[in-house]
Image (cartoon, rainbow, N blue to C red; front, side):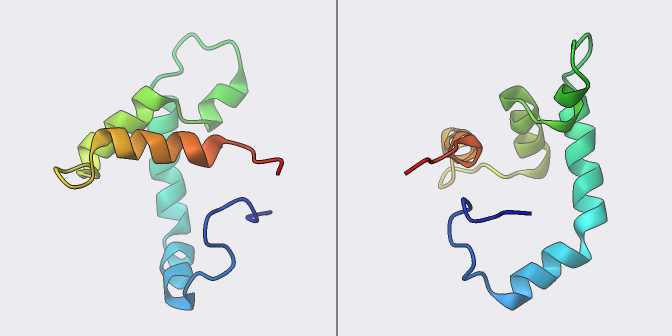
Length: 88
């Protein structure tokens, strides 16, 4: 998996990687559940493996990701930024 486009890669702390790695199956199942929540009537099978903005908002609300200091707008902007491809 090429992560060169991810902010901070490859300077992540080993401990953070270990936590994500140890929880990967659970994190993947959570992502898949939310990613599938808005795909009713979708024409593509690929839509079930991507997360739309409304699905992200549902996840953020359910998990308490946004707060007064970390707004939903910021969550959405990070989501949009992560989805961009930087050719420079």
